[in-house]
Length: 478
Image (cartoon, rainbow, N blue to C red; front, side):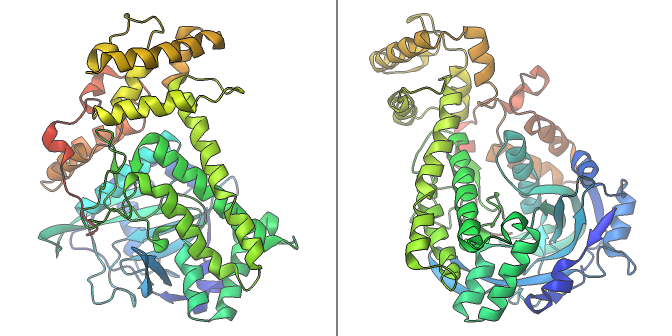
């Protein structure tokens, strides 16, 4: 095992030392064994994790820190942000040489808690654990969950809830808001130090290039575009795309009132704290570019306006290219010189107009037979005439591909999940967990870890939600 503490040692002026504060009767509920093995960490039992997190001599809390940053929240600049309920424990150098942050969510008060208790609740930690693992197994860039810790300590949000903790793992916890904060506060020496640190540890191959700042911004633009393209293709709504929730690594980060689409509603809003729909599903690509523009201001001491504009102009093409690639694969259309966007868009329009379940109907599409009148899929659409016109165009395109039905269907099933995270199922998991029963949590994790498989034993997790399950309100509260 190799641990490093570069935040504490090399970014000391940007962080504050903070020790994790144990919860009452804390107990480890689950450990992500495959991730633990990838990281090469030696603590395999629940008792070992409790000891290493909270004992005075632990290597994980000798140099734990909270970070300072700012961010644009719902479009408004807020300089008074930071790690208010979590601490960076350490960085671990995995056996393959990769560097990963270990971050403890719900660790207690820090200098940036803004009079809050610094705690997370069981509800939010379960939701983040489920979501980050669900996205990972779908192939969407994301932070991950290493372990979940429950407790008997009660904390108050809208009501009294059980406090909990979770260890989050990702390449780094550097956010757009870090760079924004030091730029807008005119702490340009600290901004330069942050860039130097980023080149040293996270953009190493660019560090010696005379164009390193432009190349770094270009990488962030590309990675962010690809991430959001994946969100759109798989029907994921993040819900709170503030710039302090945006990672420089283009990974899904800081889960709050997220949702996967049930009925396909392009303007779906998953966050009831967002009545104007700034972060609605269809708004995400535009918000991504807005956030990148906000980040790019921090590059202005190093790049001209023209250079920044040229880099930001790459965003749309990266997003459309990645989105087109995934959507063609979801629809069983081989990449070629033919523009198949009309077929894809018409399918999406039909799903939206008839309020069909996004993931369920894409999975149905995997078994579509080009012969009209044969597919049971047609019978589920009210406007059969419209479906027939669309199916005829699709059948014609498929016939030109010369791709056997069985192979095409198998390929499509690797892009159209049978199991996606549903908010109503997550709530059922939470309800049982709050009673001390984590069996449904563990079973649902199994389903989410094999989203593309046909597993009859897990069939109950594949059904579309009941009507009441589509209307659950999720807020930003932790």
